[in-house]
Image (tube, rainbow, N blue to C red; front, side, top):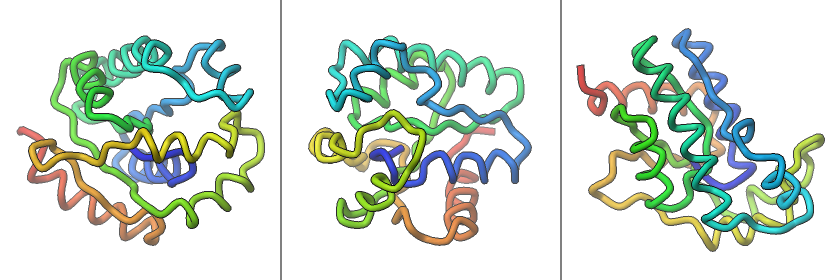
Amino acid sequence: MGVSGCGKSTLVAHLAGHLGVPAFEGDAFHSPESVAKMRAGQPLEDADRWPWLDRLGAAIGVAVRGEGVAVAACSALKRSYRERLAKAAGVPLVFVLLDGERDEIAPHLASREGHYMAPSLLDSQFATLERPAPDERALVLHCYQPIEDLRREVLAWTQDQVPA
């Protein structure tokens, strides 16, 4: 989880490849209307996000029930979004926030090609972001650590979080 451009998709692809598990890109679950809004530089509203979180959560749940483990990249910026995602999945979820400073992430986001997320929306994402509370099953990592270090930290932490 995290703001656009923090490396969620890169980490998820790396974890999925290492573990040999299904991976989901949250961006693929947005409606065409939501994609058009973001492409136009308009931030999504909660009403736009609920069906998206439900679709993604359901897909995660099916994969976990079939494979045992799945990974997904999803902004999940608010606690209510994480709760909605978990409810839709119907399986225990853990979250990893790839956290960073706006000044670190903005140049990466601006240099991305072929993505519909307008760089101008980064400020609205930071404004929306609710960092996980102590009672949430979430790990916070700096987003620009080497990918191998992120993988090791995630795998070590999740061993203690996921029920057997």
